[in-house]
Length: 394
Image 1: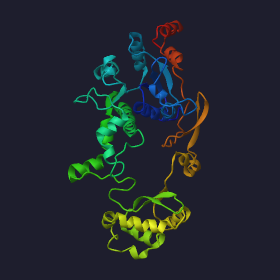
Image 2 (image 1 turned 180 degrees about the horizontal axis):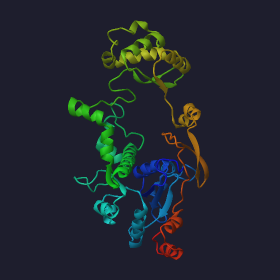
Image 3 (image 1 turned 60 degrees about the horizontal axis):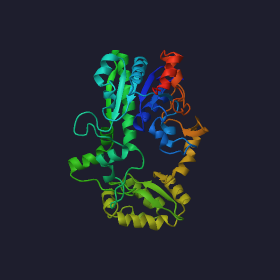
Image 4 (image 1 turned 30 degrees about the vertical axis):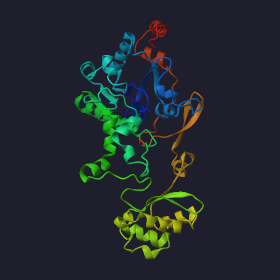
């Protein structure tokens, strides 16, 4: 672990839910020591999202492995004193409490910059400082609605929420990148940075192609279910027996190969109704009829064999049970065991392989598991720690 890029880096995480924990978990994957501050007694409320991992929340299991849990009432004077002492020894401070909460604790941007000049601090919020949404609470569903993801996702009749916490994930990714940029800048200047990431900005960036289509083209992108709004055929198709797969035709050359080598309809390769992508997109019902007529006579094994020989891109339509048994994940050794209070559970390795070694993937902490050891590291005596426990500070 000492060979990992962020070995020796101390991260203090005043965090909850998804966005900030996603950012700090990735810092931990690079070798950082992540100290997670939680509410005394109950901890991060994401611990209670479900209990699917033998009593542990799936979200908490995903986002908090390898972290040290410090319970601390940061609203109390003694709790703020502990937090200040932590920040004196920290390299990174990540927080995503309710709007204005960290400022009210006395750790506003100006104070952090002047008191801890080498600290790289990153605040995550829904909408950022300034503007009419300054103090507005934000959750993933709400930000997806504000950004308009459901206007691009779903069927023509019904828009839907994207089925993962994409606003939180995008915000967490940009916070992670921002912290890395701050640490890199500190190596040159010796100074830290005070950074801000918002879920609105992050998800708006990700949906920019649709935004620019509306802004500059004057056209609202259509909802096209599993299909592509511009390319066709590019979506889900059913084989004999009901098994589905996704087929993606990117250009007219691939269409010719699809017609000739897969569908058995060479006569359609240069048919003016479907020869070019523009015509195929306009005549989707006709293309669907052709695809269904051919593929319904073939098993999924026969179709995939033909697609492979024709060098046409395709993929299976899987569910989570299929993903858990995905042959590519198994062949590339992407699974590891993570310790939980209920024993070892399988988890995916981080998607970036490091030449220095694997991500540590440490155990899931119980609430306040490391409180005593962290406070001792900060210089508090056993009697001080006992007093803080008795008074509810930790």
